[in-house]
Amino acid sequence: MQPDDHVCLCFRVSLRKLNTFLECEKPRVASQLSECFGAGTGCHWCVPFLNKLHQQWQDGQAPSLNESPEDYAARRKIYREEKK
Picture 1 (tube, rainbow, N blue to C red):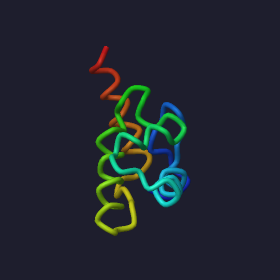
Picture 2: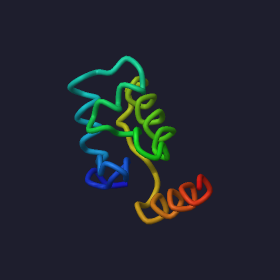
Picture 3: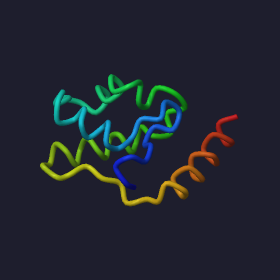
Picture 4: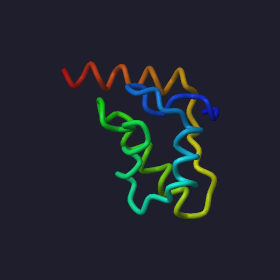
């Protein structure tokens, strides 16, 4: 994913916004990423990815996701269809 690709597709929260939130707000737990424009509070598809980004940040790594936006969106579509 590139910085301007959306991690939270429900609320269009980009990787850049999440990285900025991590650096500025320094959340103690991953669930606090929901304070970044509601990330993770819609369909919940992105919650495991938010957890991963938070863990990378806590470990001193640059938070990133090694997925193409197209594959990510396709997997979310399947997830949402299975939830119905």
